[in-house]
Amino acid sequence: MTTTTTVVLELSEQGGRDYNQDRLIVLQDTDSGDFIALVSDGVGGTAKGEVAAECLTTVAAQVWQQRSEFASLQQLLQALFEQGNAAIAAANAAGTNTAATLVALAARGGEVMSVHAGDSRIYQCRDNKVVKVTQDHSLAYAKFKLGEITEEQIATHPGQSQLLNCMTGHSDVHAEYSEWQVAVGDYFVLCSDGFWELFPQTEMAPLAGNENRQFVIANRLEQMLQQHPRHDNTSAVFIHCGSGFAAQQTETTNGTSHQSSAAVVKPSNDTSSGNKRWAVMIIVAAAIAIAALLFWPQQLDQNGSPPVVEPQQQQPIEEPDNDPPEPKDQPTQPQQPEQPQEQPKSEPPPAEPTEQEQPVDENAPPVASSDSSSEQEGGSGDNPTEQLGRRLNEAPRDTIPSDGSRPDIDVLEDHLRDGGVITEQSELEQTNESKDELAHIVTVQLMVHNTPVFGAVVRYLKTATGMQLVSGRLAYLDDMPSQPSNSFDACFERYQQQQQASGETVTIMRDSQPTLYIDAGDSIYFWSIRVVQSQSPSLVDLHLRDDSCDALRILPLQVSGQ
Image (cartoon, rainbow, N blue to C red; front, side, top):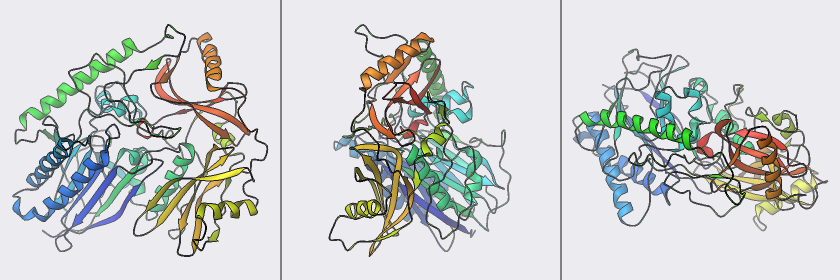
């Protein structure tokens, strides 16, 4: 059977990280319409997660070339899983500590199947709704299945970072296979967690059908980077299904089907033990959750220092900057439930936006969205979104010539100073660079007195003759003192005493280091630190004013972007 499928979008953004550990590949037979698409997210708790992701894309290409040798689509996907896991095992045997998630979707003769391991996802969208989505192999998802948290709380729960299963090269890795009943007009979205945290499930189907989806995504990511400069890598593939697919209704529960046709299997052909293993993992996850509630730290240690949450097993890889991410863990080992605490992933996305992205001109460049994610109000009493934006202005969409004789960033600084956009004390620091065959995008951070201005991030497109500013916000700050009034230790001790007086215990996450920022709204310094509050045990970024040591704002975290 000949089918018509169109890959409408492929994207992989570095986000706020120092490198991109995501990988994707899409291969298609233009005559038959058959295809295979894969997205892999290198596990940040390993030294080189991108190596495992590259192993999977390489094996996918090899399996695709041999596709005529497989009697069924499941055999093809099983070969992808087994050979990919073996390639990762070989990389680890050679001295590379690497692991990755896997989500792959393949179509042949009108049949569609998938295989996945980890927390990367596939969404199936029909009639502007999500009708089916894969299950995450994470502690947070296990708690959702047990009814301990809601589906909406998965992204913000610390257990999202605890992967129960992913591609490690070990023999105990398992794959989850699913059949998909497809109708003409369906969309499939394959994505890493850095992408699905940007868009709540209610927005995923409208996004898939939006012809301006690329700019909607760019705007949302820009908003995320301004609020949380170290957001996770963001990758996705959008596929539209045309003719040749039988219109069959997917079974749904509460509007969304969760793998009703899935089979969990090991690398061997034995499928009977897979479902038992998944059930055992859920039971173990419940035990871990109960232990975490019983042993959550509540007191200061003996020398009066603030307590820290000890992570389970894997330690995050520290990066040489002053805002280190805390990457996602490798799969939790079920035989060690005595270590209850959970380790977060990397940079924090904000809570889900409350307003839909507005359509934009298909030919227009990405523009930073003016609406921000919902935040809890801090000690200032102002709405944090309004406060943050009071002195952050949209960057001019200027075209700036540059002949290459000077660094682009120096040319850009002079242009913005001459235009009265930034002060003489301000500098720009490059934080990210994304380059492919279509575009070369550079992201820069505004600095004043060698301190980053929170939310002041600009992106420009490198051209043959210079630069084109495409998005971002800046601030003209001419009244900043040269240094903060108080140290972090002094401010946190004072804040902690205030909270203890009201019955609240504030716990610093292990390896979370304070970062100094400038708030453009009040022209003050503030300290940012990742903490857990005892009365609501979820992760937040606490921003402490350096002048009064009160909370400027409290930002709830989406875990993978920490």
